[in-house]
Amino acid sequence: MIYITIDGPAGSGKSSVAFYLAKELGFEHLDTGALYRSAALLWLREGERNFFDELEKVKFELKNGILTMNGKALGDEIRTPEIGKVVSKVAEMPKVREIITHKTRELADKRNVVVEGRDIGTVVLPDACVKIFLIASVEERARRRYAQYLSKGIKLKFEDVVREIESRDRIDSERAVAPLKPASDALMFNTDSLTLNEVVSKLKEIVMEKIKKC
Ligand code: DC
Image 1 (cartoon, rainbow, N blue to C red):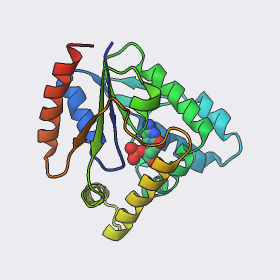
Image 2 (cartoon, rainbow, N blue to C red):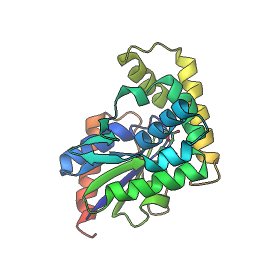
Image 3 (tube, rainbow, N blue to C red):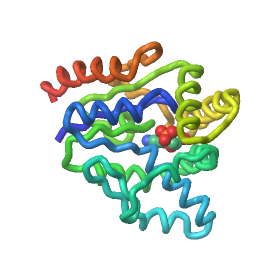
Image 4 (cartoon, rainbow, N blue to C red):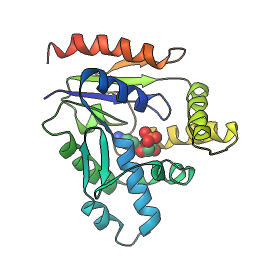
């Protein structure tokens, strides 16, 4: 089975790139940010009591590109500014990382899959065939996130989105467990000034070449 990992900071284009790259290759796509966002949703709903037990019991499934939590497809409820504010803090808890890492490996098991996140190439799937680390400037990433919010009818100030991105970068890269950083064997790919199509077709070329040797 072939694993392709895509890591990178918030707004670097991971989700769209991973989605279309997986489609082009005929692979499954697994967005691990959605797993951490689901954990944050549970945290907001449950509070501290029973949180870890409840998280442990959650059943995630991935079929034909649809990620479900306890049988229900995950949608916009995990992509709100409220979740955006707490998710880094929830993702920082070692116990949460242990549970989600385990669940990610189970979801990825025995399939050809593009897995995206922050620590996939370094911690979750260190033996993956191809590891990609996406980079883009803070301004470019904030522009993309701002457009995403607008398209969902969520109005925020652009400066607040810049601050959200900067704060997430700080928390994600400075946390003690599994911080955001490229694996030593990852390919660094800068998406500034490239369209989504350009990024996907370039990466597809690179991946097709690399998987011949896996
Ligand atoms: O990619 P995203 O913005 O949906 O990720 C949401 C949060 O989850 C973000 O704060 C980083 C965290 N995350 C993580 O710590 N490790 C991962 N593998 C994926 C996401």
